[in-house]
Image (cartoon, rainbow, N blue to C red; front, side, top):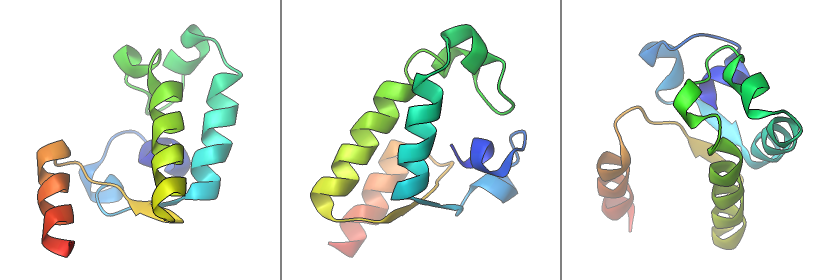
Length: 91
């Protein structure tokens, strides 16, 4: 999502730490849901193997953000365990 929003190919320096708002997540979910898997695969920055699950993932992310009252997220390139460790540190 950080790559789509910046219209760039993968570059850790551009993606890591990038802020994405809930409104942009909603907008991207709607836009991507209107495309076929093949059309999603053709988007700059899309990992082809994720094209079929990205809409579901964004839906889950959107619901989680709504539930926790969050209006933005910070993109990480480090993986789920790293993010959980950061989250635990802030609890």
